[in-house]
Length: 226
Length: 397
Figure 1: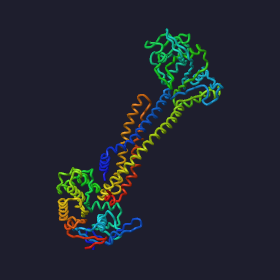
Figure 2 (figure 1 turned 30 degrees about the horizontal axis):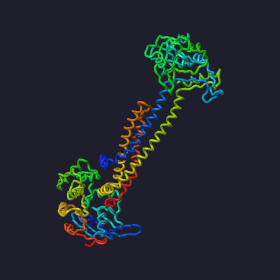
Figure 3 (figure 1 turned 45 degrees about the horizontal axis):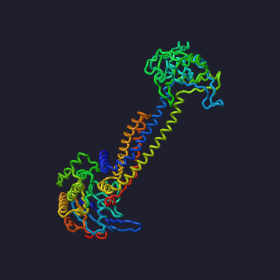
């Protein structure tokens, strides 16, 4: 029944947080299938469990119960270093606050994931240069993040997400820190990537942004509302 | 992650906080500097004393009257029972194994023309002396020979200080000097030996023992040098000399010392000194290491978000651990290298007017210490960094 076309298969995922004897059920049984080539938006108010779901999809965290099959591999009970390997290979992250290293140039920031993947220096350099060129940043490669505009910084972050050629791009409020024009540019890039076959999962609380996706899923109080 | 990349990241992190990094390494610099310098002083002292002792010759047995730690007369002086004839007996019996140079000494006044030198040590010995005592060298002229020794000729080889006092810059060879009221012909000048523990070793006149014996009526020796022909026989000769002397004397009447036995005492003392000095310096280094640990903890906290990001992008625990550990080691090692350079410079300057000797051991010690300090004090912060949860770290503001 496992179709090779399925990228993400979440089944009855729960996540509890325990703080000082008080257990909070943040996710209350989430099941979700995302096919390769999908572009879905997950929306919800803050406190709805949206971020927790993103952490689990991005294998930054493991669920309390339920199974998560990512690209035909069960990642729901993996150890920390195995999760790091999966993140490195399968997922490209785009964060709201860009999360670029300020001491490194745009090019070095883009190269970073491929260093952890063990790609050879000459090969990773060439690949990063090509991706940056494709995103129109050929003049900014040696600039530090603080010498770039917000829109440019987010494009560098997208380039970084593409570096290890992952199946999944996971974008967490990618336009949250950008003006309307730059935000529009970023969404267009994501759409383009989707057209080239990348699976995109977009987390946002803005309806205007969510409508760029092919499918919108709403999360409320730890449950999905289709 | 490859090492080259790790080193690059570490250097970038260190250089991005130049002042802070410098102040941190300063602790290590001072510690390593102190180790190099203090160990050098210890080693210099040891080598200085060792050289002085070895200058007498490592094949040498030193015979002195009385027993160290033995019976003394009520005056505190041990009564001297060693006779000049004893040394003659020894020389006769061991003539194929060793040469004996007895030393008799008398303080006297020496005159040349209108100049007077008071309190000169007149030393009577045999012609063996010059080949027996390694650092006794003739600078100018000659030492008396066997024939002059036997006949008790009134010839003198004078020390550097006596020469300066009586002759200034003039050539003393062939000149006649008065020792008390006897006339001696100067035949040579000894090479300068300097002062040892404040005693001028050059305020001396060396004459044949028979001459001194005759002039001052001496019968007892102050000491005797016994040079062994084959160094391997030193224990054997010492034993034989002891047996010869015991026929006439008791064990309390004489002591036989070798350079080796004196050296081992010196080595013991200076080793303790070096360990003590090194220990003090190690404490300074320890304090420097705490500084490294402190700044690495600050660095980990400051870069929590970076750690989270690296983990999100695929860094394993070990990648983060190595990154921060290497940073601590580079910080501490660069302090170590600067400390070694400063320590070597200071030791060199010190060696120009005091004793100081740099040993490769102290450099290796300092180098090893600074790497170890980096690892030990960098470990806890690095482990803390590697254990950070990527979600919490990413969210950290």
